[in-house]
Structure formats: structure tokens, C-alpha cells
Amino acid sequence: MNSSTAVSVSAVSPPRLLLILFLATFLNYYDRALPAVLMEPIRVEFGLSDTWLGLINAAFTVTYALFGILLGRLADTGVRKRVIGYGLIAWSAATALSGSAAGLGGFLLARVGVGIGEASCAPTAQSMIADLYPAQRRSRAIGLVMLGLPLGLVAAFLSGGAIATALSSWRAVFWLAAVPGALLGCVMLLLPEPPRQAQQEDALAGGMGTALRQVWAVPSMRWLTLGAIGFGLAGYVGTGFMVALLQRHFQLPLVQAGVISGAIIGGSGLVAMVGGGWLADALQQRWKTGRLNLATLASGAGALLTLIALRLPTTRVGWFVALFAVGWLATYLFTVCGYPALQEVVASRQRAIAMAVNLCIGNVVGGGCGVVLVGALSDRFALASAQAAGQALDDLHRGAGLASAMLLIPVAMAIMALATWRAAHHFVADQQRVQPTLSVVDRAASR
Image (cartoon, rainbow, N blue to C red; front, side):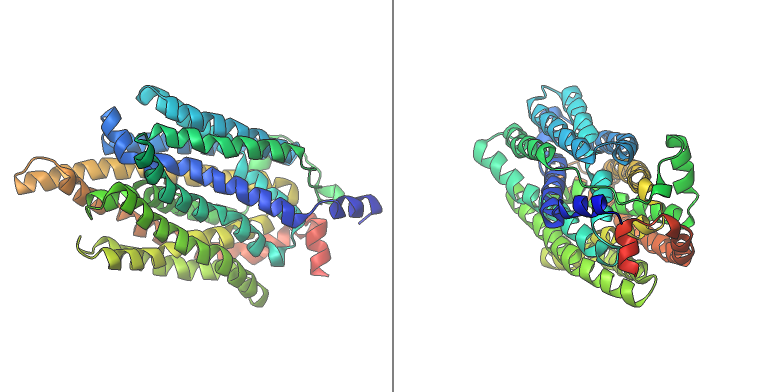
């Protein structure tokens, strides 16, 4: 490492950057969760079916995924603080427009705008973290940043319904949510750009097509992308329909349903991101595939527990919360196990684009298609329930239909278990293949 590189590294405060990236991740998931929290009042005002609610989620998800590749490539080639800073400002403006939509079309376009802006966050943040933290500390660093995922969701679930009830307007929730993101975007633009620690021979070569072919040629990258499909399916279906499930199936009011959803998502996320990140790093130092083995075991157990929870009768709310929360840990552990593994099997100048591809496929196939499929299945099962009972379609039948459709969650977790198990078989060879292009931080740590 030359003297100029050493000076640039010391000028960047990793803890300060982690805090900013955590806040960006927190707002990212807070803003995207609001339609799920406010699903019932939005459905009633616009006269929507569950299929249409799924399509709204899919529009955001597909936009988020596709623009993630473009912005991920920009993060590999450009100034990363600008990618996130301007992205924050853009998605905050679109969040405000979500609350101003006069009808379904305007709301849909606003959510597309949120997806474009939010696509800047994850690939860029992962690239920054990989340059500032060595591999043996990366799960903890990523876990602290990704703690914004469950905390952002729980904040949305806890506050969204309460604000809408207090102000008698679901629209006001979107307007208020736009303010902190715009301010944080300005703060991000004022920070120094973290230095890239890639070796000289790791300089960019070729265009986006070359980069995409190179990262997709890595076997463990492909298996981790299958895992991302399962993660996207479980994550978007769970967070997107949880409040509605508790309202319809368990007959809970909006505020209480939001609080319980926040407890499930926030409690399990706090344990997984902090404790899971530490455990993943500890296991990785003992075994070469320690992180991926942890994700495999957790996903298998999560599939079983969420399956049991979704088959409980409507009177067992407490048991549902306990079983589903423990099972839900598996989805969060994928981020602190799979994401660091992905960073170690691709060249340091291709980390953002690799992450973007992983997120794109996972979000489009798992998240986008998954929520549409669940919405369509929910409508179909609800209608079948009403017809079987010889009754008119009401919230009780909609609740039964949604509970049946959400059985896709344990299926998704089983896919995650299979994917991380297979990725572990290729991980060591893929890691050794990319050793010549490890960053300075990683090479220094390995000595």
C-alpha cells in the first residue's frame, strides 16, 4: 500500500459511514413498507383486489431490480456517495408524490419512482463496506447496516397505522416520511468519497456486458442468486401481506395489526442482524463455509416453523406470533451470510454489479412475481372459501384465502436452504479463483 492510499483510508471514518448507510437503509425500508402497512385503507379508497395490490408491489419491485443493475454499474465506475445521495433525494420526492396520488395510476407511477431511487442504496452500500472492512469482519459490518431493514420495517408498522389513524389520512404518512430522506441525501453528498482499495490489475475492463458475463460465470454466484429468489419471495410476501393477514384472518384492528407485525419483523431482525452477524463471522473463521452452513440450517428450520404458524387456527394469535417470528429469522440471516459470501467470490471492482444482479433477479422473480402470485391465489382461495360455505365474499373468507396463499413463504425458505447448501459446495474454489483481485483491505487482513 502506498502512502497516498494510506492517507486516504485514514481520512475515512468507517463507523461514521456505517451510521449513514444504516440510516439510508432504514429509510429505504421504511418508505417501501408504507403501502403494506396502509394496504387496507388504500384498497378501500381505490377499490382494489388483492391481485391489484400485488401488481402495485410488483411495479415497485421490478423497477427497483432493473434500475439496480444500472446504478450498480454506476457505483462501480463513478462516485458512490453521489449515487446514494441523489437516490435518497429522488425516492423521498416520489414518496411524497405517493401521498398526493389522485387515483391508482398516479399512485402506481409514484411507487415506480420510489423503486428507481431506492435501487441506488444496496449495491452501492455493499461496495463501500467491502472496501472498508476485511472479510473476517464483514458480516458484522453488513449486519449493522442491514439492521436498518428490520428497524425500518418495524418503524413503518408501528407508526404508519398510528399516524394515519391520528390524522385520519393515510396520505399524510407518505408526506411526513419524505422529509428525513431528503435531508439525509444532502448529508450524504457532503461526505468524503470512500477510497477504492482495488489493486491496479483489478481496473475496469470492458463494458457492462463483460461485467455481467464474468460475475454470472461464478457458480456460487448463481446459487446465491437462487437463494435471493427465495429471499425476495419470502420477504416481499411476508412484509407486504402481514398486516392484512392479521386484520382479516385474526380479526385485529389496523393499529394492533401493525404493532404485532412490527414486533415479529423487528424483534427477529434485531437478533439476526446483530447476533447473526457476529455468529456468521465466528463460524466463518472456524470453517471455510461457516456462513453458508448457518444460512442453510436456519432456512430449513424457518421453513418448518412458518409452515406450522400459518396452519394455526385463528384463535392462536400468540402462538402464530412466536412461531412465525422465530422462523422469520432465516430471512434476515440470508443477508448477513449470503451477501458477505458474494463479496468474496467476485473481483472488488465488480462487487456492486454482482450485488445488483443478485438483487435484480431475486426481486423480479421472487419479489415481483411472488407478490402478484400470492395476490391472485388469495383472491382465488377466498372466492372458493365463500362458495364452499354458500356465503357472500367477506373479510373472513379473504383472510382464509390470504393465509392459504402465504404458504408460499415456507416454500421460499426451502429454496433458500437448497441454494445456500449448493453455494457452499462451490464457495472455496470460487474464492480461490478471485484471490488475485482481492482488495488491499482483504490482503492486509489475510497476512
